[in-house]
Length: 166
Image (cartoon, rainbow, N blue to C red; front, side, top):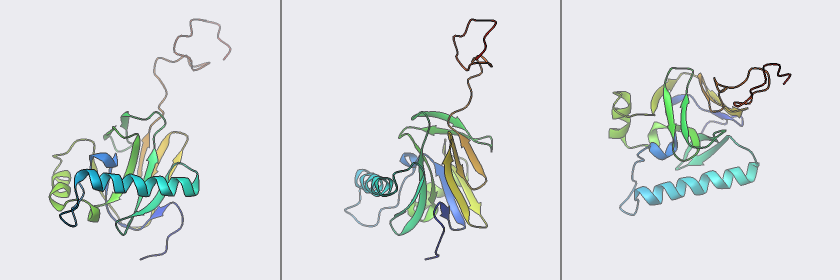
């Protein structure tokens, strides 16, 4: 396996989504959707405890992947690529296609799955979380967008003061 800097993934083919939406490949009869998701969460939480930070690269089934919490948990967030990313587990991730079911990956590539995008990265991918933005290579998803109804001076939605000084 390639030696990588912390916060980087190797070049390759990835799915970007809330990892709970991905159908993972089953390695044997003992694998169920629930056991795979449980293993995934255990590996993620172990790495988060070790690093004490949001936005981590960790090993799952022999592959490195990136996962970050969002600023506001579940919801729908816009990517700079024009895609909408739905979130039901409070996280977004960059998951190598090798851990996903091949038929599922094909459906994503054909645009048959919502909230999931397929990406091929030709070089190492920098991944991180910064002030509400989850960045995975060229894909940036803002999970803390400004509210269009907020007062431009103070940021409060219910600001009624025309002379607001912030």
